[in-house]
Length: 227
Image 1 (cartoon, rainbow, N blue to C red):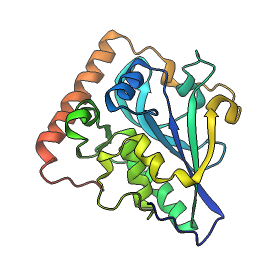
Image 2 (cartoon, one colour):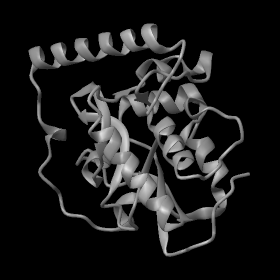
Image 3 (cartoon, one colour):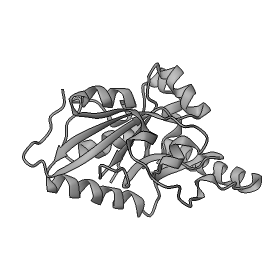
Image 4 (spheres, rainbow, N blue to C red):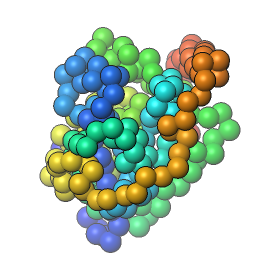
């Protein structure tokens, strides 16, 4: 049972769970036995300030980290329906500002935050594990919610959540369930998400990110410190 501060209803955060139409998303749903494989968090009802840990370019799934998401990145400009659940959670002004400040901290961190890829790949066996300055999408959303002082499950690590479990914890805050593309209309935007990075650049970027993630796992996982 989650605890929500109802001191002030002027400010809200929005948690979005989605079924992404990618092969990787489908594989996650099957392996984890969940309906929704992706989690995001927004600071406005129109989802213009929507953040998650996901791929920066569609053609390079290993190049992933903190991204500001857009409807295009969910539909891939090729499907007319993206199933979502959107939750509206009341917060105080202080909680709201704390969340936005945390986004800026991650965005401007000098080390750079990575996508916690190996935690996802081995989730069926390990049920998630922390990596220094790395998050999965669900881990990031759980972290953001906890940072703002909202409790989901006492004692449960952020890395252990699936998107579905986050939804179960905040089920009484459900605002919308249906097609994301019908929730609100947003025009296409110019973005690097659909750029083709090229084989060499893709291979180099992927190799650097994987080795950096492995280094962080081996170097820091004995004593995780995430600012």
